[in-house]
Amino acid sequence: MNRLGFFATISMVALALMSSMLFVVDQRQFGVLYALGQIKEVITEPGLNFKLPPPFQNVSYIDKRLLTLDSSDTEPMLTAEKQRVVIDWYVRWRISEPTEYIRNVGLDESAGALQLNRVVRNAFQGEINKRTVNELLSAKREALMADVKREVLEAVRGAKPWGVDVVDVRVTRVDYVESITESVYRRMEAERKRVANELRSTGAAEGEKIRADADRQREITIANAYRDAQKVKGQGDAEAARIYAEAFGRDPQFAQFYRSLEAYKATFNKKGDFMVLDSSSSEFFKTFRGAMPGPGPVVAGSRK
Image (cartoon, rainbow, N blue to C red; front, side, top):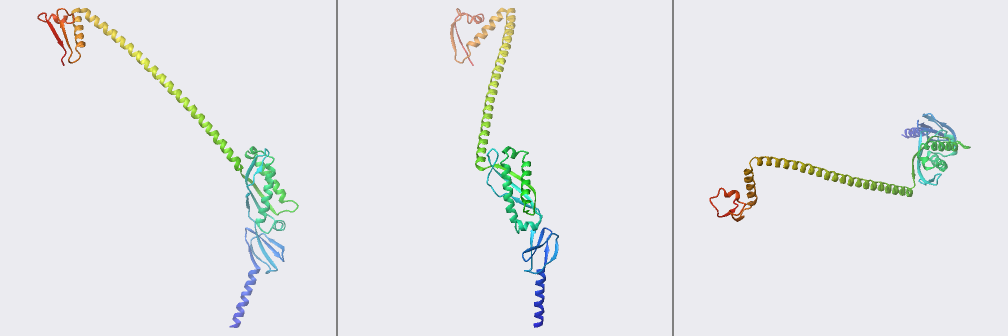
């Protein structure tokens, strides 16, 4: 039993020793092998590798993928015309030489991102100081990004190379500081309100003009219609008078009789009207006297 425990202990120690001597490098990483604190080897190919057990040799890993650094500083920068603007940018970069990177920058990606952020911001500040706001918003932005990338590459490839490669530098937003932005928005709002009020006034004036023209056209149309109606009516009355005159001219007695009937009709047009006349002296009932038996008072009234 003691022999079995001894062999089990030996096996566990051997397994622990073997596990400390084996390590795997992923395809997304660099494997950096240290020997007593010094870099002995950088493994760039993925796979299973061997090393001495700690503390003789140790291994650390650095990301070899393309990394993105986004701007985190909101401090404004001054343009050529002394306008304060805030820009958002990002940088695509990668670690290309792990040995130089560890010696001159740091042991992990965060150290490189911190120093790269400072270099990129300084490069942007220097280039924005040379340009106006219109140039930052126009096609000249490409030249700005190219100049910043060139300056950053010069910094990381200087006397002490960082072992990094800057692939791209991009500006995502250029804006005024908040106080200026609010002022610009207020001016824009006031301008839009002024234009809106001007359009409303113009529309109201045009509406009044259209209504006045419509009223004028209406009055003209009514006047013309009334004129034409009166003209037609006059022509009708003239024609009727001509026909009456022609008809009455053929029989004067009938004409007199017809006019008398019209006069009677117009006189006794209300219920309860009475007239007391002397038929012998009144010309009004001259038409009736030929049909009446003799003279005497005549009482006339209307009945309905």
